[in-house]
Image 1 (spheres, rainbow, N blue to C red):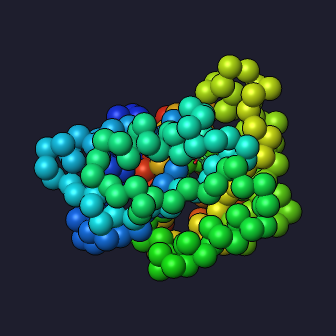
Image 2 (tube, rainbow, N blue to C red; image 1 turned 120 degrees about the horizontal axis):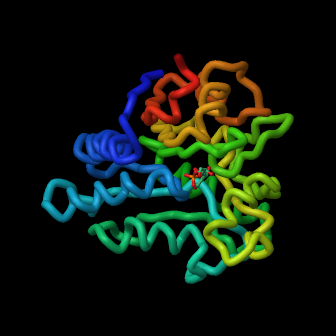
Length: 242
Ligand code: F6R
């Protein structure tokens, strides 16, 4: 596990973007596992800037997102599909047919979970998986639980996650109660993992995840067992460390 300290959110975003762009340069047809939420937005912005300067080419890059809310159409402005479009895809030369996100409108949950796992298999696995960290230790939408879920599946979102995500909706009532997510097994099958963490509100859970016991009660703690994890965290997120 490699830990890179960043001064603040901006610095974390640039360091993370450097790691992502190195991946794209070293393997132009790489498969990136993507996250949504506030954490990676700055890194995506930086990648767009480098693309505009002619330093990055997304034409052969393939992507697979971690998760999607169930019941939101692609054009709903809170869907993760919409998020990816706004924050990355529409600004770079990625081929949309190379981008994959679970289909939130598929009501047959087993069928959708199996379809998504098959897409990931057909892609040949994820080269670099980008992750943010939930306040309860979730990665993707794998909430604290008694087990580490293996594959893509449907989850009931916990109250704390609904609370945290309601800022993007008009009210908490509008936050979907379920989501499709890659499983913990899916995530740790990625060859390399980049965990980005910013802010003092994440300091305690980051410390527990990386220094506490490996337990499904803190889903991100599984990262301690992965052979190639890079953590880029800012000083505020690392404030429990010393
Ligand atoms: C998003 C995702 C989530 C977020 C986490 C942190 O695709 O899978 O696990 O990474 O909830 O969210 P932010 O970055 O908004 O604090």
